[in-house]
Image 1: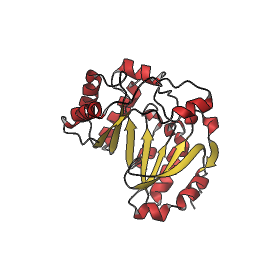
Image 2: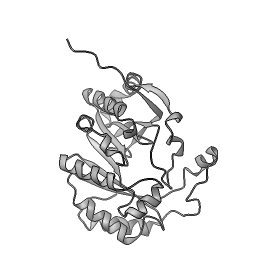
Image 3: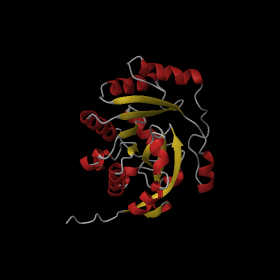
Image 4: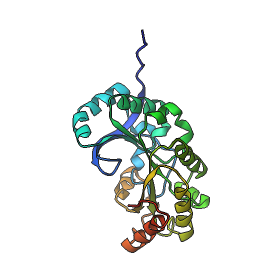
Length: 249
């Protein structure tokens, strides 16, 4: 007789339904609390700390997902674990993804890859798609942007996913004066072109929509003085990836 799996408790900040943003179709997106990075453009500083999440067991989260299960299946969607950084809670993330997978739900992991070494083979086996946020290819820019991290673990994780043939959507936020240097964009495009199973690249223009959250938390928004890039700048960056034969949005 098999032993029932013990449910794992995680810290969940919130959840929502989205369409076409956090993976294919309409998706149940759970935002986990806790992140090791402090990105200057982060629009969710309220997810940085684990204590800002609600203790939630996998049973509880699966029960919540179950309320929408039929709808998201019909809509060609699935379940996405985002954050914060879901790989800061690998046991919880692993169990949620595995149990969703067992229920026939498409699963996606939204991650910076900085904690990619926390994702074991069991976790990745239960992941149908990785939404990988590569914040910068240039190491100095990456560290300046994240205020804490190194790009090395993210690139290592990307190569591992490539070797596994794991489908990826690469995300890159274009920030004027910070990540938009032509050499940085070209280098990132070259790296992405070397990977297998990259289905698309999303070049996302920086925005200030989360600035009010910093005010509520009594924090200064580091990029309050930076304006979003204009449409031409975003299109130039996207063209760099397209020139490498990469599907780009």
